[in-house]
Length: 235
Image (cartoon, rainbow, N blue to C red; front, side, top):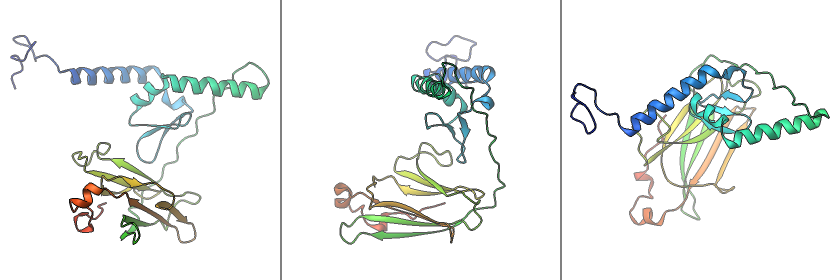
């Protein structure tokens, strides 16, 4: 492809990079530089979770990559929490000295044994007309002492399908099983206590989650509120 006739380009060159390309290259260079100078293995607050993203255990924040986490550690929030933690530990020690960092605990690795069994039930509230979904996920071989985790993910966070704002995803995870996800309509969810709940039964090792969609009057007038137009979740 000929880039030499682009605006700002010179004959015989590859053409001028776009602003987004320049930002992407700058972020990558900063990330590589930070990774060369900072050893994340010695950071007691750096943790990679079972979903493949990264967490700051001090600030309870999520990050998509190491560069995002490193940028967070230089921010005001992380630095303030570090100072607060150091002051608290120094006070507990009875002196002005700063307590040493906690030792880094290695992450446990599990061999995946496949997907868990699941069942999805569509329901409707007889009083409000709200549509709901009830998920039952079976984990007969779950690691002792663990409980399944779940989270909602936007279409722009996943990298399996082209992003579409009409959809969102619900993920379930528990070791040593593979993480499973369900593709759902991107409608507002009712987060009230009686409309959104989870329940884990250790004896039968079954995890339940139920939520209701909020009623959108515009969607009801357009006929989008029926289950006939609501696709079944896909894993």
